[in-house]
Image (tube, rainbow, N blue to C red):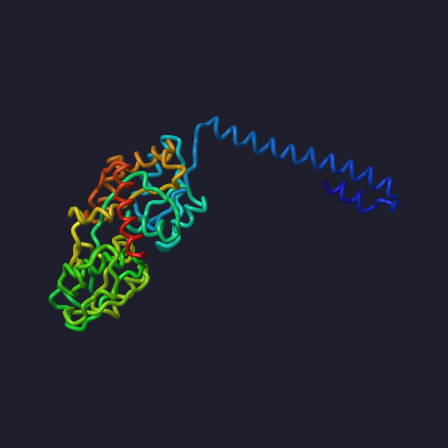
Length: 314
């Protein structure tokens, strides 16, 4: 190529000769491009021939120990899991929708459905994983009763976790929600005259960092573990085994077009291997409740939640 460039730069300014050389160079370029295409086609064939598939899976808990076992077991079935880490909850669904990843594993059904409705998207749960409690922590107080009247509690500010956090605080008798509250409650629904504390919404990733400056903080389990909190020391938590926890079933999620993808179904099945499940439970400090629900059930739950969300916005 360097010789061609040197030859071209030294051509005399005679149109006919320029045209001939340019045609010759064009032929060479076409041949070169064809060679590159063949090369990549051959590489693709080689990958297909060895039977291996790479699956990019996004998560906010890439540091969890179970990923090592998960990847090893997948590799034994010719699936190379490429774990893509996201620092907060708002990134992994757009990445999946834009095909920058193939699957994600970080969210519960309510969070997924709220994203789909808000963005007119169709991301689809293909397998259930677990439910974990949402817990109240404090660095200042040893129990719920010790939290003073007028105290401040930090809660996640994303809509679905915010509503769940408010329900947790209501169950802990720290606030009262007008009408009893629901999966879409907001701080505006707090009956201030009947509530013991006020709430401060913050980014979910900042709920642990907020602990020194508030009386308590509602922290999602993965952020609690990453922040060195011990779930057994939580002041209060909701009950993952309660039927009302159904919207908080976590799931492996794919694009709608890939909901029946055989490789992704295999990935989901590998996740349910007892060797992975044991580590998932251990990673959650034994707070996770493993869930095995058919994908059709998850889709039906999501559909009901979508109706509720849309009705609230009409």
